[in-house]
Image 1 (cartoon, rainbow, N blue to C red):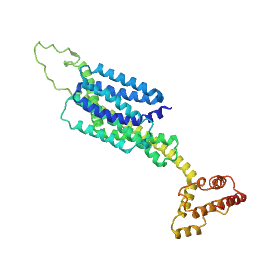
Image 2 (cartoon, rainbow, N blue to C red; image 1 turned 135 degrees about the horizontal axis):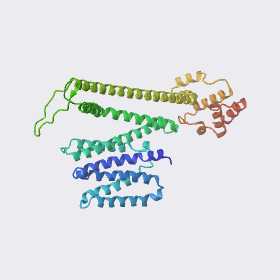
Image 3 (tube, rainbow, N blue to C red; image 1 turned 90 degrees about the vertical axis):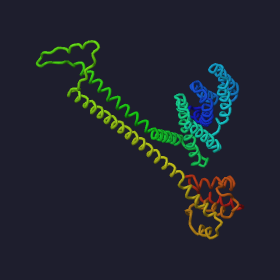
Image 4 (cartoon, rainbow, N blue to C red; image 1 turned 120 degrees about the horizontal axis):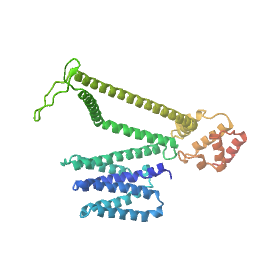
Length: 409
């Protein structure tokens, strides 16, 4: 089992655990704000336990689950002495762990939509209640930050699950796509989520940039003022002069106007700071644009290659299937028009395909979309498949043999 396959198996259990523990953290963390970090240890431990239990064989899960649950309850007694109400967290965590293991072997497309709807509504309800609560203490800010972080992780896993469901729907659950397409869709989903997260965090990013600019400007000013103060001396002219006399004890400080040199150096520091920030931003934007262009070229090349391969493989099948299915309409006028159109070449392979087409028109009880293997004898089906799909030549004897074997149908 590869690491990526194991992570995919952990996706649905993690969705359930994130939603369940958000409720537990909200219910238990608000009455005990100083125990938030200790309560947070149990969701993290449950995630590790779930990954471990999913990886082990089935016969070892029951004893390992019992050991993990006992360890969680024992840790609850150690972390919360004299507070039995907080022991709800390890006990409920064991129940959530047991339920989440039932989703380990399910694919996202096999899971009921009510599962995703229930977990998403749970996350929304917890964040809504926490945001509009009347408590404004710093401890509640920490709890809200943890719940928001869990919600961000939940959204990422939810988008990855929906990506797998979309790929399964695109193939109608009949074909297995190449691994490169699955990986590309995963990378695009993660990039889309990162871009959305960056856009939603834009005010915080702008505030951080302003803070960094002010800090850098202040650092330059302090460095320049330190250098100026090293040479701060009073002179009477010429090359003579001495140090300023010491002020008597208890005298106040004498405020002096900054010199023209100090003001000039301060302005130079501000200009230099702006130039450094501008150049850094330009280099960062240039790097991001180059990376995005490289990614776009790579994706376009990949999609072009896949489109060419898919078109080459399925063009004949799509064209012929549409022709055959349209000829099976119950409208007699359409059926006569289809008979009048030459749809097949005048070759032995075209003769076999034309004969099977007539059989389709004559046998209305055959299901739409059924294959030749389901409708014809094995030998006749093999001849039709060779004429229909294979590049091997078909002789007149093969066409006569096909007519002979399908004459009694």
